[in-house]
Image: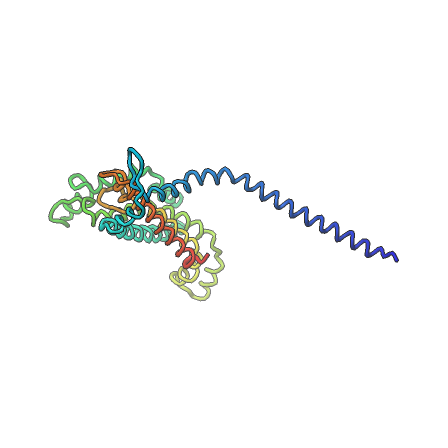
Length: 309
């Protein structure tokens, strides 16, 4: 017996299956086309980043010779590095530098962003001037700071010694390792806080005012509105700033190296170990690997425990 409805239903089901198969094939083609588009970028990134990392790890197992073949020595470079007191001093200096600069740039950026949210005359001009430390060439600002702390002709000694008589004699503030670390931290905060300021300011401008209006009706003061409304809204952006600043400051070289040679953070210590003096590039490679592993370990911990991705 012929049932038209059954035939129609079967035909419709077959057509629906064909459409599903065609859509699946289209998605596969789109995925392949997408991989073709990003393949050049993947190759470039692999050539500029992944290959140097692997090659550096390879060199860390050798006694690198500038002339002649390299000699395989296994883990000896790592043993020499880990048993060197200078390495642990560089690690301690790096952690002090990274913690100080990260907290400083985040807090200063937050404070400046909160101030810039208020209306006052010439606010647009002030917002533009705040960016000057971040966009100025590092070599020029470093020379300016070196002149500022010059023990003979510097402005700092002129004010503190000649005018205010705070010290008994002149001294070079960036000439001693203890003081130079503090100066390097302050310099990095001054130079890098505009980045944090811009990211925080953009987030502040996107917060809905209805929450603040409701808080005012309930009688909340400025601190309560900041703690219970503003800060939770900034949690993700502050977490992102912290991890970016840690990565950049952990690998920071040019600011510290140009400002003073008395601050041996890991990047500067690695440079001196690999390219000055005895030029032990094998140990320099081992130092770079250790620095890379420390940073990767922090990133994994921070992403899972703090950002909770």
